Amino acid sequence: MKCIKCGTDNKLKDRRINSARCKRCQHRFVFESTTINGVKITDAMFAKAIADISVNDTLFFTSQQLCYFFGKRFKQKIPRVFYTTTTSETVYRPKNGIVWEVLGWLIIALGLICIVVLTSTLSLKLLVISSYLGIKLINSGRPKVRTIYHRHAHQTSNKAQTFSINFYQCQSCINQWKAINPIPKMLPPPRDTNENATVSPDVSAYSFDRLVVCDRPEIAQFLIANNFHFENNCAVLSITGYPQSIFDTIMQMLRRNPDLKVYALHDCTPRGMGLVNQLRTSPNWFQNSSVIIIDIGLLPWQIIAAGDSMLVLNSSEYARDAVQLPPEIRQNLSSEELEWLEAGNFVELESFSPQRLIQILNRGIAESRNLGRDGRRCILLGDEDSSIYVVDCFG
Image (cartoon, rainbow, N blue to C red; front, side, top):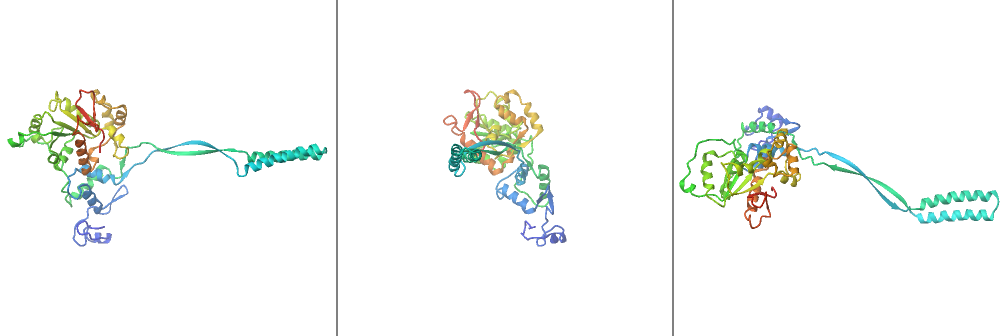
């Protein structure tokens, strides 16, 4: 096992002698002989996962993103397979079939000639023998039908997947790692505070052209930590009011812009399905406003259209919540989407790597910039007087 600090290879004997420390630099190993559900965890493996998800310490990420990222490497998907059998028939003539058929008729003819020429009992026997042989040759030479049986394997759409290492086990690994090695780019849980931050009047006099609203504060914190708001000149808030210290000020700034576009970003869960409706109907947001709202996703039909490229999990709790969705939300979902949700399926935004999630959001915003002139990449939800759109793909 190699030390992540100095790269020295330490054999089991070395690690035992040095109390699970590197024989050269004395750095302590975290996962000494750690095996979870048949998967051996090593320090080098975990360090590489952290480096990969943060793109070599250039992007912040949540602990849930790390759990998804690490768990995907040991993803289990057991497809359900059923078989069907079909038949097909082909007509073919045996090799030299015509020759055998002609020869058969000649033998029968020879037997008939014999019974005409000869009147003895021998001629009758010759006729019987020649007829038997002739019919056999004729049948062996005639075209035949071959029946072929085909067995087809079909894989059902069993999208719900499981990890060899579940989230609880992964979080335990993270805690063990943090006790010895820092993870500078992993975000702590977002803190809700009612303390109002002081915003300069010069800054608050301006507004934003765009607002990204997330259904959970963890996603809003993730985007802000990675400077998404600076790079895209947009505000980032969560539907819960995160960050609370500047929430009221930001909303005042946003309401000054009559051309504001609002982007809803949410998990594909029953709760996430209600985000756009809450933005449209809540007095704390945009009730009685004509502001354009664009649903970036995640939506069930985006996941269904993506095939097996997204990580779908299943929850009985979400299945119950989906059945109880109010009519105003259900009316904007197709029967296929409702069936998908009511089966307990869900996809979380944190199942995407930080880099990928930021790319998807950037693309969604870019595709909506010409809204009104070229809305091919955005679909109007509802009638022509509606101001709610959805992006026609996710990623």
